[in-house]
Image (tube, rainbow, N blue to C red):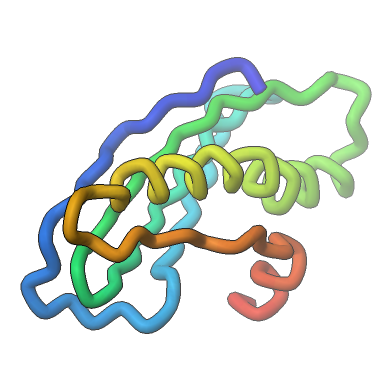
Length: 117
């Protein structure tokens, strides 16, 4: 991982958002032969608060990584690396007076990806 930053963080009182599960979107952009930009967007809400977090990670692969492994590393490992940061940020954003905080348990990224497909 070369760089990691939050591109967007939103926390606002819930005005009727109905998110039963985590809303997760992943976007992978190949910047050059060995560099990728991965954007992870997560939206969630409870009865008190709506939270949206966009986390961007820039990853560089070693030139010796075989092409068949490259896709697995970008699709799964980058997300697994980024998830703990996202989880922490959502907890921080939702911990406010008079609000039930959103605490997201650890997630099995490989299982999540299989279910998404």
